Image (tube, rainbow, N blue to C red; front, side, top):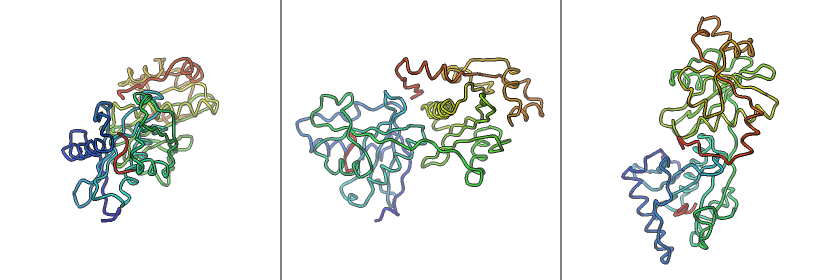
Length: 325
């Protein structure tokens, strides 16, 4: 078996294949740490997401990601395991790389993890992959056998018309959103991907100090995990750093979500007047849809200042053969 024969897919925590691998992981940890009770699933978040590695339809490894409490932009790697007969073939490295890709697709900017001193293979894997030691975080701060690591993830990159246009258009259409004006002059789009394809997308149309946020789309299986919130916050923080002062958007059915992100309702005429040349405003005017819309506004600099005065919240909706206990 080579890593080319390996298939990595998503799975739920109650998948029988995952359950068997996790039981084997717990047995492995119990043998390595006979004097320390195995915590098992004691520190697992309800929003945990598993990745399953299989070869010839045979489960050979797994890992999982879950939201990290603070900072809310981080993800935690859990339950990394490769079956003994499949070790030494690069499966753990493939699982780790896919976990990083998945975390980035969900808008996380860092992965954190905990492993132990009796798992030298795990420590070597994470070190090779660019993870660096950090102080032990709760609930491991007093665990003398635990070692914690972290790695920053690359921020989302902007979509390009020639490379991403067709996929972005199809993704938006699949989520019931208009693709009119996608990647037109004066627009910027971001799209993230995981092992199942496009995950989250959004667009910006800008004019001077004002921005129009549009086409925020989340794949159905990822809704409620904070992925859209994290991508919105990343894009707006970047826009604010570049001098933008105000973000507007049109939305008639997600007011509660936008309110949680610091937006407030304003007259549609205000948003249209602030961004008269925005492609979406042009389209709404031409089709007569503007009168049926609802407009929202967020003052970017005020929001950024407020965030520095309070701890981040989860907003949650959200190696070695044996690691990430």
